[in-house]
Amino acid sequence: MLGKWNLLATIIVAVSVIAILSISAEEPEPPSIPEPAPKQIPKPDPIAESEVDKLKKQIADLNFEIKELKMKIDELNEEIKNLNQIIIEQIKVIYKWVISR
Image (cartoon, rainbow, N blue to C red):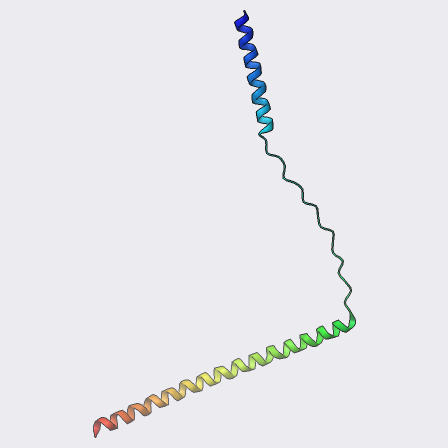
C-alpha cells in the first residue's frame, strides 16, 4: 500500500512540476510602446509663405527651362547625326577619288 502512495505522490509531483514549467515557459507579452504625443504644427509665417511662393514659381520656371533645354539638346543631336552622315558621304567620295587616281 505504501508503494501505491509513493507512486501517487510521484505522479502528483510530476504533474505539478510540468504545470509549473509550462506556466513559466509561456512567452511574456512584449513591452507596450507609449504613443507619441501629437506634434503641434506651427502656423506659417506670412513672410515665409510669400518666400515659399517665390521659390515655387522659381522651381516652375526652372522646370520649364529644363524642358526647353532638353528639346534643344534633341535638336542638336539630330543635327549632329545629319552632319555625321554628310561627313561619311564626303569621306566615301574622297576615298573613291583617291583610289581611282
